[in-house]
Image (tube, rainbow, N blue to C red; front, side):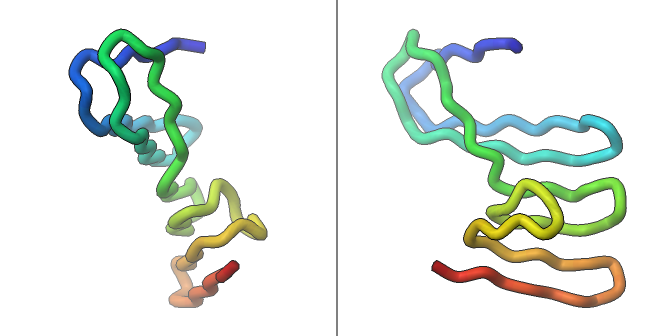
Length: 77
């Protein structure tokens, strides 16, 4: 696994394409020189599902899921 270091004390983002998925990650502001801890914020999976605040279809965490067929679901705390 690759470690990312903070270069400037500011918010960080990372975009990855992996196994047919598009994955957006975010991290809070931190001190320069420290390791960045990313959180997966949004995923467009290889089936066309858009997941916001979730990492997979059926994930029970708080977030939103939009399917290619037009269906949508939201989980609140």
